[in-house]
Amino acid sequence: MTKPLWIKHAAQLATLASDTQGPRSQQAMSDLGIVEDGSLWIEDGIIQAVGTTTALEKKYAERAHEAEIVDATGRLVTPGLVDPHTHVVYGGSREREFEMRLEGTSYMDIMTAGGGIHATMHMTREASEEELIQQATRRLDLFLVHGVTTVEGKSGYGMNLETELKQLRVMKKLQEVHAIDLVPTFMGAHAVPAEYKGQEDAFVDVLINDMLPAIAEEKLAVFNDVFCEKGVFTPEQSERVLEAGKRYGLIPKIHADEIESYGGAELAAKVGAVSAEHLLKASDEGIQAMAKSGTIACLLPATALYLREEAAAGRKMIDAGVAVAISTDCNPGSSPTTSMPLVMNLACISMRLTPAEALTAATYNAACAIKCEDKVGSLEQGKQGDVVLWDAKSYQEIQYFFGVNHVKSVWKKGEQVV
Ligand SMILES: N=CN[C@@H](CCC(=O)O)C(=O)O
Ligand SMILES: [Zn+2]
Image (tube, rainbow, N blue to C red):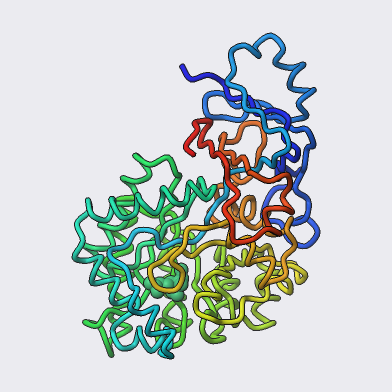
């Protein structure tokens, strides 16, 4: 039997707890539910009590000797970070493209010429399940080191049934064996593979008639995502794929308005997507529509930086009433990173989120974007014991002293993993 875990004397225990449920926007993103001299008791992987150290000392006076005690004096404690948008399972890497882009070739030009997503598609088709598991494990380990305890993962480097299934089965295995919770998304509509060039609608038919039913049959995905972008999938094609996914119980997500303003944010609101991703070029109408529909904006400031583009209008979105989540977008082309702490820093620096908003976006709102908020994203009685102890005294400090990994220790379901 593992001992209960008792964390005591946190200078700031940022619980992210709230009386209201559901994604947070505007003022609600600033309330971190901070307990000073905070304490947590975790048992059987679940948070049993949250409060001041004095209150928990009273409550557990009789059982203190049973617990493993962690002294968090002078330090910040937060929920495990949640990354709601990654492409973490893929074969190979694309360093040469990084150089090409610095030499002046654009991301889309590389993709149109058969590189980019297509290059990773070939490397992923060629990789065995074991190789994919090995490569993704290394990335998931790095996520943990950066305080991330729950990760969404997308397929979409197969673009044929066999490889899409392979990617999703790898995620299922990783969910079983790795400490991180991995939430799977089907993204067969990530690009149109060369064999369907000029017959894009025929590929959409394959996605709808062959891939979606097989993925749903094996229960391999929770969400269905589409790259709605000029030169990839039109809003009409995207809508067909997302509506078809809904018939199989898959919740829509959309890579929207990343490179050009293309009606992606509007479509996200129309189909009732849980989140729209990227949104660098989202229109004002699209932002309004998302505020109205309650679609979460999942913003990816590391991708914008890596592509040397202006970041999404995070500040404007929050002020307009859109709930904002943030993510690494971990992928081999436009954002090869697992650092959610850096993403929080960038959310402040490039999108003008406040430090408190950035933490909400990386925890509770991120959990809402992958429908896990009943289990993770805040430190509340009954939730998983996913906790980060930071080598910093406050949430402000981890945002202010940037580009540094301040994570000291991480617990997943009450077990120390870092
Ligand atoms: N934009 C589309 N898909 C990924 C990038 C995938 C890649 O370049 O391999 C993204 O979210 O950034
Ligand atoms: Zn993505």
